[in-house]
Structure formats: structure tokens, C-alpha cells
Image (cartoon, rainbow, N blue to C red):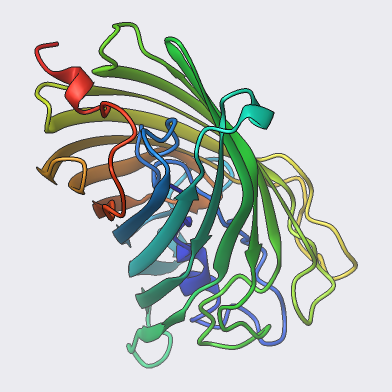
Length: 334
């Protein structure tokens, strides 16, 4: 249910070695809109374990400055860049029985380890004797843990909300050229609101705000500014097994970078917007679901223009009898 934001900024400004022993001024945070599917935080249809395998492939060949202009050179020196990255996240989600103490809501807990790779190729005029930079990094990324999420089903509405923290378990050292983690603790407060206009819940309309704040970067006197994202989308089942989804989102840096190690202009805050379309199919009803999604960013400021392809598999182990009629069955003959 929860996904990382792919850190292409790490591959650009850290793998290249932006400045020896200096923190990169480009801190993207952990979470990014669009990685979660439209229904990923909907009220669970049953209790038990849910296993989701997310595979995200991201590419970019443009970086935009604070005015939104593509950086294609530094003065008279032309500049080209080609970045690619891959993240695999295996997410385990536990959902409780409906609890009377929560007014019929469910308690949820999530743990999500990840493995990621990132690579960069650059060409910077005639610097380096016409040789560009070609760098790669791979390893286990930061670990996301959500100790407390809660979800309620209220007629035509679902509400899910909770807290997640991200431990800096991925490799990071300030000034290193093979970093794969962020190097700081992140904390996320998230809520998801769903409206189902039809009784069968074949149509879902979602709005999901997320607020993220951070701790100090390891071995540096810099604390990245907080971030706010807003996502929205529509998911439509056309049969008990097949659905399509449209999704949009925005993310803004809302807090200033702080600390005596900040040497850049703190008034330059990044932002980005995204749009995605996806299709899903239940290969085995109520047990195995597959989803493919394409996403693209636009209107970037101090950020990369990204193209993303994502493949998701959801496995629902059948440890016990069903509690009730599933949401998929409820979409029949919508």
C-alpha cells in the first residue's frame, strides 16, 4: 500500500559526486505521488496478510531549474544527461479484524524493504577530454515501516489514515559516489478518502494528501525541508476482474532546508506534477492481482522530468475462510 519515491536526484548529484564532502542541494524526500495505485489504501475487504511486489522503472533526460527551464548547458558548455533507475519494493501489510474499539474500523501495519539501482550518463561539452560520466549504484534502500494505520468503511465512503517512518538503512555517506539511501529519517502522515457513487463500488474516486518531514542528514548539518503532496484518481471495474485507473498528483517542498551546512538559496523550493494511466486484472480471484501503469511528470521546478513504468503484483494468502463477499464480487454486472 505504501511506496517509495524513486530518488533520481541521488543518482544525479550523489553518484556523480556533486561536490566532495558537501550535501547535495537537491533533496527529493522519500514519498512521491503516483507510486501507490488508486485503490491501494481503500478499506481492506478482509483481515490477514497482503503481499505487494512493486517494480518501478524510471528514466529522465531533462532537469528543470527553478523557473521551469530545461538545463541544457552551463554558459557556452552544452550539457546532456541520461538517467535510469529501478526499484523493487516488497511490501507486507497486515489488516486486523474489524475492531469494536475502533468503531468497526481495522488496524493496519506495513513493512516495506526495497532494492534499488540507479545509473547516470552525462556529456559536458569538451570537459574530461570528450569523455562523459558513466556511473552506477545498487543496493538495499531505506526501510519503510508503518506501525499505525487505521481504516473505516462508512457506507459510500472509505477513510484510511496513519503514520509511517522511514529508517535510513540504505547506503549513504556525504560526498560518496555510490549512495543508494537518503541518509536521514523521514516521517509521513497520510490520509486517503474514497467515494463510491454506486452501491457495487465498481467506481472509486480517491483523494489522498501526504505530509512528510525529515531529520538531519547523516554526517552533515543539514535538515531537508518538509514536503506536501496531493493525489487524486478514479478507478473503474468493467468486470469482476478487470479495471482501469486514471491518476494525478502534485508535490511541493513547503519547508525550508535548515542547518549551518545549507550553502544554497533556501528560497528555491522544488515541485512536480504527475499523470498516470493503469490497467489491472485479477489472475486468480481474490488471491492474485496484476497491474501495469505508465506515468509522466510535468510542470517541474528544480526537478527532473520523469517517465515511469510500473508493474505491481498483489498476493493475498488464503489462510482462512472468507469473512464476507469481496469487493470484486460486488462489481459484477455494474
